[in-house]
Length: 367
Image (cartoon, rainbow, N blue to C red):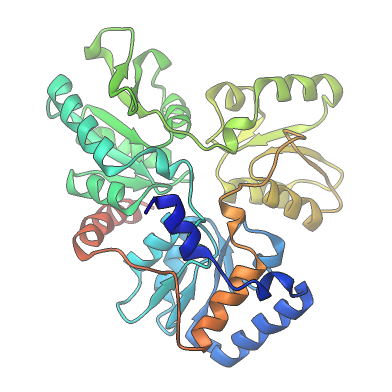
């Protein structure tokens, strides 16, 4: 059976849920939440649809939500409204009696999928042959549990978009070079901020299984995995140039998963949390073009009617995989819990968990 077919089967829900009105499903969700009480915990990522986020017990970025899930020892069921790698992290950080559920198994992350463990091991062997024992692996938390475990096993750690600078600084106290997975843009933007020139950054192409670099290999300080966020890469230099011509007074703020050129031309760049706080603190009447996921941009626009807020790319769509989780899937997954037939339970094996948690802990002690 193909992986795609398997995902379709795992994510299928009865047709009746698609024929219900939003009001009917919302009533059912509220009823389940009331019935289960503290036994249920629903974390919701900032990029989720409003129809889902309205029922979240807490909102945040991926690591925030996993940590908050771990702190909630009462909940027997954690229905994670995010994507697969986030639910994996929640499972690894929570207790054995708690079950983490992903309402739709198709809710993945294209960036995380750009680095699998087999590609990573191949890359590591070849890079070790070239550079010797001089490399420390770091992975963005937007990666699979297996990649996190690989980093933990090899002395490395995880990073978030909020603490990437701090973690790269630490990594350079450990080894001469860094392998940064799986988002080349976050790695490039962070290293550049720390003063590492682009000329000392190489790119590893996992498809071609080769290093892309034109200089002397001894000069390489950072090896960037050739991966990216399919949403943030759609913000372009042309978007900024047009905005500067038509609305020169507008502030441009973007996520560091955007390309290096876009980040350099923007007024501000930072994590999702950074963007949210910047808008909250901005004076009334100010104007903002935001380069991040559309659901969050729209939510910020609705939450701050005293400010002019638009997407940096006017043709941007929400993250397709994040939007797999909708009200029908949430309703169905909750009602299966009540029926004592919970589905889509996310579990990570013990060995992977052990080493992945090491990578996470190396980060958390420096947070």
